[in-house]
Image (cartoon, rainbow over all chains, first blue to last red; front, side, top):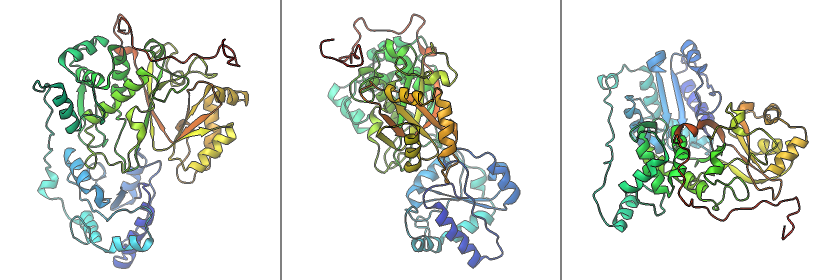
Length: 61
Length: 422
């Protein structure tokens, strides 16, 4: 889950590659949070509950 | 995600903010399983990002991705299930008596000021300031933190009055300052990108307390604009616990933060409804409206197409607030934009941002300026809220001094030509 800070998308694409190389049985999706990093995205949380077994969330800073 | 939805979550923030987020989480009873990639993540090569991902967390020394996998898969510990919430100590209400110079030093060295000399908030001065409202001094006005997520400190009418005295304000300014405090928005929330804020006053109070909405309204030329704006910064520092490098992370800082572009809207010269009326208030209501963002460009000219070009080229962060001189507003109205809301819709529909979904409510207009030229200022400011000033005004009206302090006033021209001698 890319919260939208500069560089987050590229960083998470590398995280995704790590999973593909090291834990290929884990399916990963890089998802960009709607709106901007400072507002809630209430539609997002139930969607993640429905579709995800785990979330890597970031990258702040 | 974990508490409410039961989804294992591995949060990540760059190592620069490790201490910040750990403390922030603890203050909310959350021992989160953070992983800290090196920083910066922004604007570095893919090779470097790959090294980050394959390397160690610089804070813990553990392989970064091993931490992420553990965060997602290991059961919670007892400490994680039962976190202790630390409480930050309160400052004493009164300091020991001392020489004025020593107290100025103490305030400065404790980080309780904006770096400029203050008016020391003696008991007598605070008591006088409190005559500016009928509200009980111990009434809670709000709570804020510059981190927006760390423990928020509550503040009372008296504490607001203390900061108002420090800023150099008089009782006549207190209702406006209380209204700002009631929004719970710090003027300097923490972001590495150096936020700027703006507060715009509408309604009769602006004229009563001698605010400027014309020439130089956002400049250093008006007492009320300056002290009200400054009080907001001092409240943000003292209530919001702003400590550079610790809770406040703006890497460069923002020169607008001293007085936060505090001004009144030029309702008399505006061709549009006042901003607060467009938010649902009556014209006779007095209000403050809060805006915040990162970028300000002070010289723009042209009609709707020029506004559109500016939004497209500026890479706005999802919002835009235009500060428009009355002449520019009249020109926009002459183009057919009788309603700024329609102009917002036009800009949102055509701005074509692929990063943030444009939203008409995110594009706003306030009319400020002295009609020396049809100029507008563009910002990426988000409009947050409008709050009542009236609720803080004493029943007998604004508490004016016998001889209110006023700086030299700008006198608008009587006709369009401003011929000398008229």
